[in-house]
Amino acid sequence: MGSSIPRTAYATNDPQGGRRFCQPTPPPLMMITENTTMSRASKVTLALTSLGTAGIVYFVHWSQEQEKAQMHKGVERDMEKQRIRMERQADFEMQKALEEEYRKLQKVSPSTDTQGSSG
Image 1: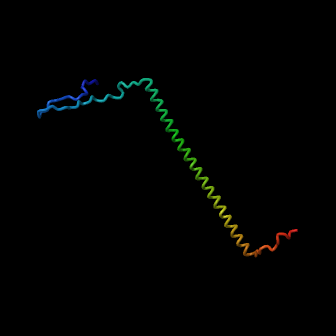
Image 2: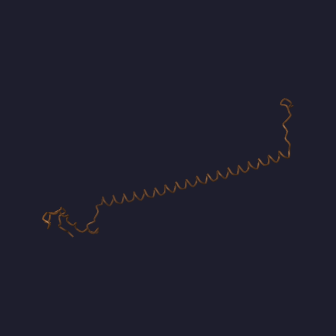
Image 3: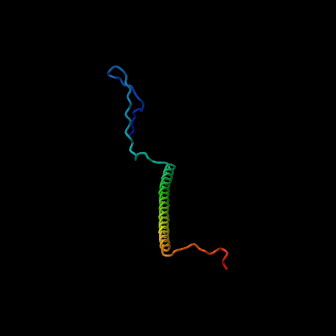
């Protein structure tokens, strides 16, 4: 598929009385299968960069999964803390209600004991 068309612009006579510069048409593209032998260094470089890229993509995916798992654990801890807080609040409210009920049933008067009368 060799073509001997020069790659520089050339002048033609213009019918209107001047010179016109034209670009040559490029030769047709070679098929990829023709003359595509790679050197050993090129093959090694391609293989190493491909492996490196695959490794980086895997590491980023793994890292994102780890971060997602840690964030989910944080949500679970927060939910557990909220559950404990709600239980404590419920216990507090129940104790407060019991105290009010006991105060209604029993009249508590201040102590009349003096501090020095123990004995």
